[in-house]
Length: 109
Length: 114
Image (cartoon, rainbow over all chains, first blue to last red; front, top):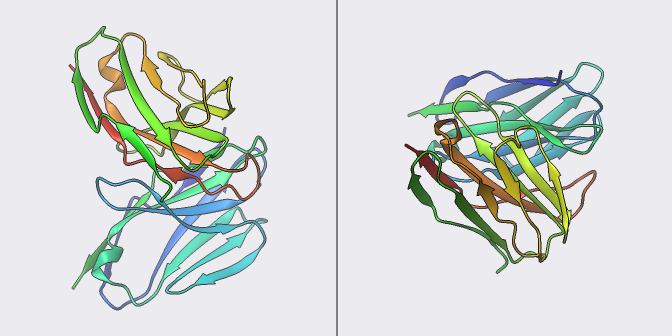
């Protein structure tokens, strides 16, 4: 079966750095997405990785290792508004998005 | 500005009733998707469409149907609502069907089946 694992919840301090991990086992791989979802709102796109390595976009970076079935989202200089759920999703061999359950990130002052 | 809207935003219905959730996008995207989101689960795909007159079943399609008569709309119908269908429903659209295909999400519909 297809499976995406992420920690259920993480806590970090304002101004710090946090890394959210995602491991996946899917039938094929055509890219990995990270989305941000604030409570009661729709998911919004953060990043896309299809090749190994690090993609940096401002305070957010996303890393992919296809051989290890592993990705992480790195958030720097945390702000209170970063409190949200972060969803990892993999595009499988049928170009369907398989979603993880999401990681709820709590930022403390 | 282009957008994707859903209506109603909240709905309470009774077991056995037919319910239709609307989704309308002005992105002119070919691809549209319906997901449900429940606590402890990721987004689960219900139905999707790659163009007018095209519809496909997703992972959790039982008890749901869709139709695509134009580019802008993909209504989701619950034929006979069940308590297990209490959930938050998201509609999404994207421009391509493969590779980099960022999906844009509507605001969601919270459905309660009593």
